Amino acid sequence: MHRPKIKQGDRHTVHKERISFLRVANFSESGVRSALEALMLPSKPVHLSHSHGEMQGPVEFYEKVYAPSFL
Image 1 (tube, rainbow, N blue to C red):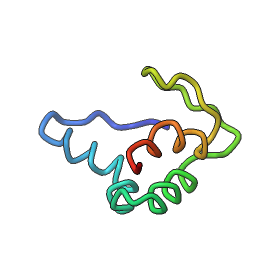
Image 2: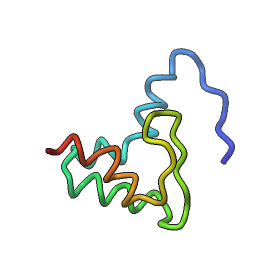
Image 3: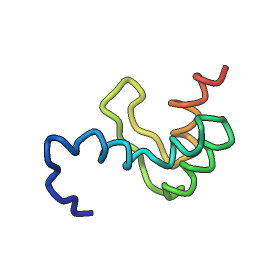
């Protein structure tokens, strides 16, 4: 996906738009799960430059990254 160059003043607005699907989900457990499943294909790997490492699809991504926040 090609993203147009962002003006410095618009950076925060663009970043908010990029995660708008999570903001609309109100960070509820079911909302976040649904948003991730709509965004990601189950067969695609997820690579993070964090201690989470590599995952497969939205379900594993949710379980490793978001689920601990809902405990």
